[in-house]
Amino acid sequence: MAMSILRREGRRLLPSIAARPIAAIRSPLASDQEEGLIGVRSISTQVVRNRMKSVKNIQKITKAMKMVAASKLRAVQGRAENSRGLWQPFTALLGDNPSIDVKKSVVVTLSSDKGLCGGINSTVVKVSRALYKLNAGPEKEVKFVIVGEKAKAIMFRDSKNDISLTVTELNKNPLNYAQVSVLADDILKNVEFDALRIVYNKFHSVVAFLPTVATVLSPEIIEKESEVGGKLGELDSYEIEGGETKGEILQNLAEFQFSCVMFNAVLENACSEMGARMSAMDSSSRNAGEMLDRLTLTYNRTRQASITTELIEIISGASALEAAK
Picture 1 (cartoon, helix red, strand yellow):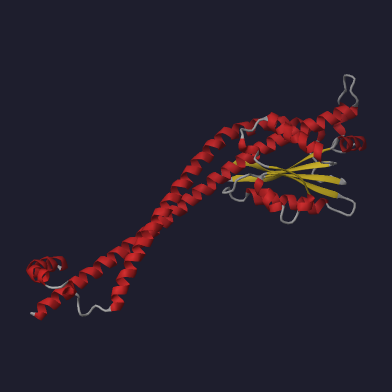
Picture 2 (tube, helix red, strand yellow):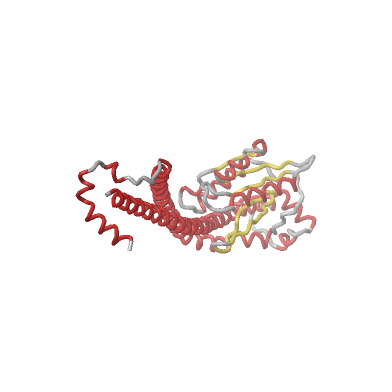
């Protein structure tokens, strides 16, 4: 009805409108405040459109990051599962006693170099700080070895003096045992310890990971525990062949155990990082989609209100011109 009236009035008034100044078609009912509102309305429409464009770009980025994380997860997951067979024989032989009381403890914290992967980094930092409180004492010393940029940034705030070594960009190249064994050798050369406690995230699924602590004892502590018949007492049931002494064999076992545990821990943590990033990017993509729906609804409502207002003003102007004749 309104559009038919508009077309009829437009055809009839077109010659008179062309002959008059543009200001003559302005409705006497329109005020300066309404003109300001029309301008604000058009500006808000442009703002909403720009916001929609930015949200679409963010959604594209999060979807791409999710696919990249999924690809990397498939490449690392199989290697992480296979690496579990490296350190399990050492656990059966030497045991894993995280509650052992020693004078010198070193907490090795494994984290990621990049963010956008949920709470895996804050989780390992919390566990590391809890281990520090449990093992610290008047005659005890606890030091940190930080692997990963994110844990380094967090731990440097309040534990800078307790950090002995930091390693970053470990995942820059594809992980292999040779690379991790060099890292393990550097840690053994730069710190003195009775017990090494490796804190990492063990991979269970894309949406689930478990903060885990693996303990590696020094050869002296292993021999001491073996003599008292604790959890390491089964070591004496094996025969030693060759010219090496028991201390030398324990030294080699401890070094090899640490490198195997570190290799598995690094791969497990990488899997957890990729799984957490997949989950985080999937949630971000869904949130961006929901925000885009709300912005689209707001944009359509604003646009329809603007069109309706303009139609009303045109019809009012036509009616005013008709009444002025």
